[in-house]
Amino acid sequence: MIEVKTQAELDAALKKRPPNEPIVVLGGTRTAPLVVRNAQDIVLRGSSHAVLRDSSHAELRDSSHAVLRDSSHAVLWGYSHAELWDSSHAVLWGYSHAVLWGYSHAVLWGSSHAALRDSSHAELSGSSHAVLRDSSHAVLRGSSHAVLWGYSHAEASKYAALHRTPGHSGTVKGGVVIDVPDVLDMSPAEWCEYHGVEVRRGFATLYKAVDDDLSTPKARAAGIFYTPGTKQKAPDFNPDPVCGGGLHASPSPAMAATYNSGATRYVLVKARLTDLVVIDDKVKARELRVVEEVDRQGDPVG
Image (cartoon, rainbow, N blue to C red; front, side, top):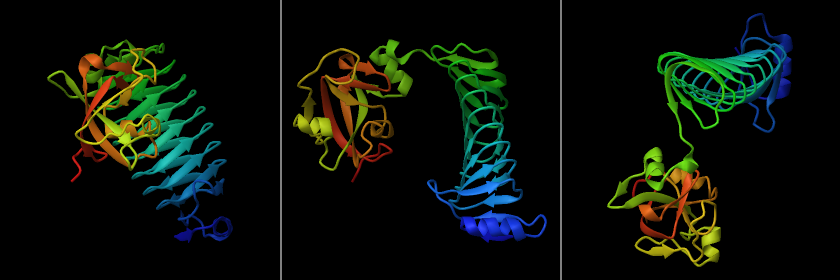
């Protein structure tokens, strides 16, 4: 077994290695990956990054990452990740993840996950999961699960679950089909049920992702700080289902963080259910009661 960390070491190993001797790639970064061309018996380990071209074949382990092009092939294990293009192929195990483009193909096992685009194809087994877009296609078995968008198509065995999103126009055969309603058509109570938000005594439990000073850039400009034990009111509230004109909150700390990527703290807030205005995966309200500071999992801090 030959270990390489640089492109020069990889190129030299490919020229000089004995027949069937594996090359273990331990180097490369996301911005400067090692390039493998028309090579077999390549193993990626650790946090290595590589681009596979031509008819290359690689086995990905640990948290390694690969981009597959042309007719290359990969087998993924652990928490490895791959992006497939053209007519490339991958087999996924464990908690590995793949994004498929073009006419690429993947076979998923265990708890692996794939996102399919274009005319890509996947076969799912075990508890694997896929999100299908464009004209992609999937065959599901076991207790696998897929979310269908666009013109995607799926064939499923008896216990596989298919979530069909609003506007989906592809064909579905078999499985347990769940038609997901349009979030924007939901009432505040339906939105809370959809996102698993707890509602007690007419108040919904929501979260804000804030900065060190318990505020956000827009809130700070309005003099609003989400200090536990306080009530904060929107000075510009309007009931239109658009961003702005209210205090925004999310179903979980992680979802709140998508609207404040630099957040360092999180707070649990309460809002009156009848006061909520649905805006996709978040809501806004006239007033928020700040209860306590929590961590990213929603557990109390301190």
